Image (cartoon, rainbow, N blue to C red):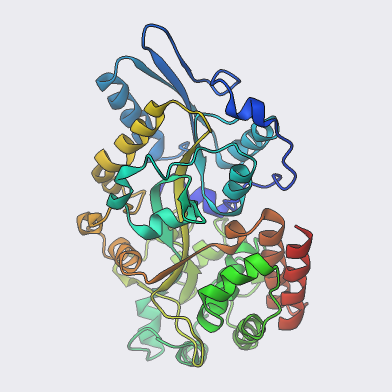
Length: 432
């Protein structure tokens, strides 16, 4: 599970970049303006690589891949900095504000990368990424703006429902629900059987945003979410309906006792409640099984996965997914060898990344290499996806993403109406 899940648990979005004060001259100038790169007269090249591989398997795997690359290219030196997610965000924010970026740096795409791109700090890879056709379109999407590509993915995932097959059977549920109406009926069946339907980390807010985001996708559709990002108006009927459907669920009181104060990976939190068999479902990303095991217990063969249901009357499809992943971007003017390294990391080491059980495929067809049934289910869903939406707290500027999380949390807690949620998000968007 690796280096990617902690980043999701910690929000993924780099905050504090809404007011970038940068010197574009410094940003686009020579590589030794603090970025750690340089080319010597003797042909030797060095570049800096910042990543968040402080947990396994990346902690061991990334240095192995880096060493293999430099062994094959003796003229290249890679200066690696591995930082825990929050420390990385703080350091990169400070570096960005001074107009400097490391040559190769961890990114999750979306609103923060867009800000860095708009500030002239990031290399446009569109014309030099000739091997992008080997990558899945879904994995590239978080790093693309107006048809241009600014990052290379090494991991991709999606959010869906993880469920306890044993508890479903206890409630007489024979197959996962395909529609929202069926989902609500199953929640009622689970409650009637004495089973807590859903585990939720209400304290951390971001897990709750998965519900509203999916419902907005299913009701209003992906184009509406994209349009709202441009018009900065989330008050449309489809977004209000998304909140109304979420309130339908909340009114059934489906969550575990004390969910408003529960963390995600903490003792007694969402993952532990699920892993310990104390709830039938959780809506979470591809890292869920590992965190369940770490925080609680391993459900093993009792654990299943299904995509977020469709909503009657909505325009969205079940094959349109909400997700995100990890990637790397290059600072403007980074040595071309840095991109060669990313090609080596992603294309030539895909099998190693997958075998580590810490990452999901970004190379077309690589999902066939997965043995674990649940990982394969997620990878197959991604491979067959007809649409993709980046987590809303990443897709939009940080202030807007935070408001989505805060307002949805208020709706779940009964403090805001569906209409108030859309108005608050709109106000944040217009002020961002």
